[in-house]
Length: 386
Ligand code: SF4
Image 1 (cartoon, helix red, strand yellow):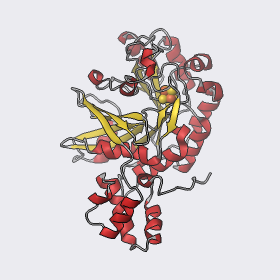
Image 2 (cartoon, rainbow, N blue to C red):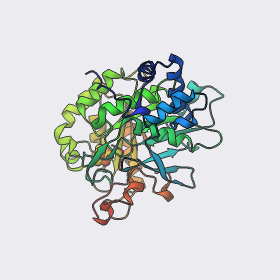
Image 3 (cartoon, rainbow, N blue to C red):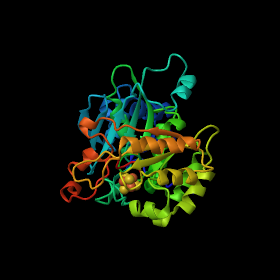
Image 4 (cartoon, rainbow, N blue to C red):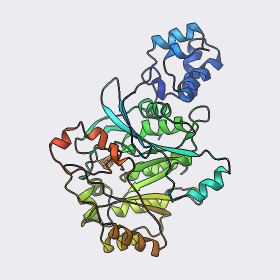
């Protein structure tokens, strides 16, 4: 499916270099001016024309007249004792989402050997992961999710998605480098496919932010047609994470209504067909909720379900919050779950919640201002991990 036409005047920060080329040509500007503007925005986080100091005065005036500006701002930034920074991002056109900067921890256990080998001995000491949002609210309605309880308010534009990274980058600390971006905050990324695909192109553009495609992860609740589309459009190079949270249709449908539309019988074959690069794996997110999906039978069911899928499993113990009807699993149950998966040959990692002291589990910061808390609806501490 061809991408939808892009209106650079409506979403300049979400525009690709060739679109700046065309605009500058229409203004009879010399071609290198377009790259200058693109780089100011995407590599220096400057979207205010007045700040583009090596751009001609005439072009700056035109850019200002077209309304070029950062389409987002940081409303609040909280830093946890573990270095996690949680940002509440506001938009001039309305709405707030959240984004989290997550520093590496000494005991991070997955892919470290692979990363060291890939990056070499002089790799940056602190590789930061940023979690970003793709919608204000979410239409998927997962019963345990903070982001989903109030429904979808609106899709973010590509510029609003990328702006979270442009703003987050300004908060990086000495010795830190942005290494990974995960689309795992508020919203279902694949429900906002065109803007997300454009944002992926911007995040990985070599003249801009320049992330490796394998360092950008799209996390989905399981929209099968869009998983196929993502695989085709990016040749499987973009990392994929899928929230399962249950090993069978009955349980999964009770937690995630999307499963009624795309049951496991459709989702799992789509994952097996995803055109992953050699030695890459799909991340399976599985949040453990005491007495709901954390029994040994669930672990055995998950191991069986994943056969033939090149997968690693993230086990996320539920982090209960006020008003949450769900309970965290016992540590012994989490470890038993992991043992069963590992015995079946799967890489399975137990994830810790980062930044507990600032409510940094996805969904919580925005949630604190939301009616969801007051309504005492069941709330999922890992909300947004679609
Ligand atoms: S878990 Fe993800 S897909 Fe489900 S409602 Fe929350 S944000 Fe949406």
